[in-house]
Length: 150
Ligand SMILES: [Zn+2]
Image (cartoon, rainbow, N blue to C red; front, side, top):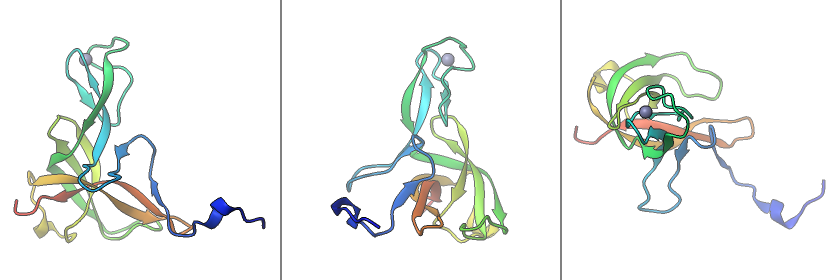
């Protein structure tokens, strides 16, 4: 196989699960956020973003919004089966974001037990690994973790 200078990178890559869903901090001090859509007219916010506001149903009212830093645990379940590459058990949840939307997310940073979680507890956004792919790359996505001391 031909080797070019640019091919020297051999380390694991961190690959977003999907482009355009979230922002991963590139420097210290930067905060992660979700890339959502917000209606300029009525304030409706949706994640992942929709091109047309379901309330106004007019073209051109939705604009990109950076949301999701804080949320509250709406409901959760501890899932003891997992797809290949995922850790098990995992905590799957719905998180009510400060900006309004309720989104599906994995919960991280806490033991997967009923005692460790409380409906309504404060959560914060983290961008972290959800699984490895076949090439050993880290697949990263948005997840929520309990806010320390809450
Ligand atoms: Zn609207």
